[in-house]
Image (cartoon, rainbow, N blue to C red; front, side, top):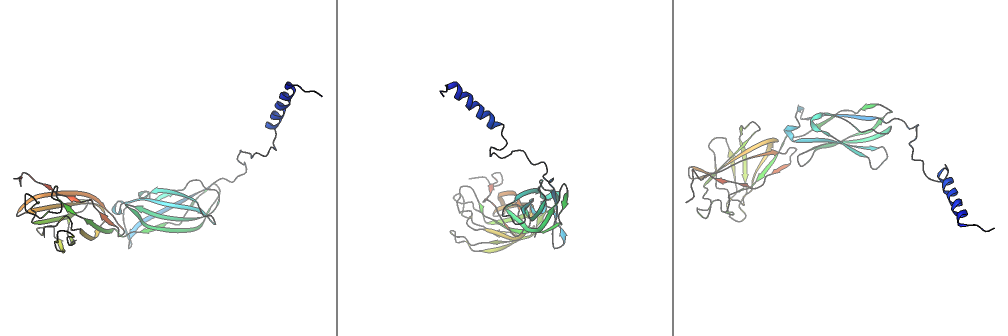
Length: 275
């Protein structure tokens, strides 16, 4: 039987139309199942302290609490994050089942404590399940490190003017968030290029000073209280406070070292005019 082009087009249209109406063409049904159980949520809570004494998140520069949620037996899961200061957080919606949790306290520069595990926590249909509270323990102390420089003098903080800064002694005052000076012991490393000797300096928040510190001598202090801090540096030329700098920074906790940028002193040209 001879068929025309119109006959083929009509047949093709029939096949396409018939295929689009079929329920068994092998394509997955994109509609969600109507009998899926309702999801649930997990509520986590935490406190922060050290050796039984409470600590605020601000005191340790704590930023967030992360919660890794992994179905029991699975390799991967999801991560929820909450503000450290909120002390409580509710997870995203989760299918009912058992989950392993890892909670970590994050802060300035890294993890301050954790992970703390809560295993086989069951999410139930349509409910918010409270997880056993977590007590994060964070030592609110860390170390401090910095160098002292002056503009245009290289490592010659201590050389005679005009080629050097002419500094004869240095005072360092470390202050708390309220601006109160805190007596601090500083260690002064030996100069790698200047040959200046190592030493220790007990800043007594009064008149104590240390001989000139070269820009190649690292200054360190241990067990500095974490949180918002400031530091006042003074470079003396004889009895005159010719060089000054005040810096503000957040000291890290949990034994981490806060390494500051080079602390460049600024010359007081009124008290110590340039010749």
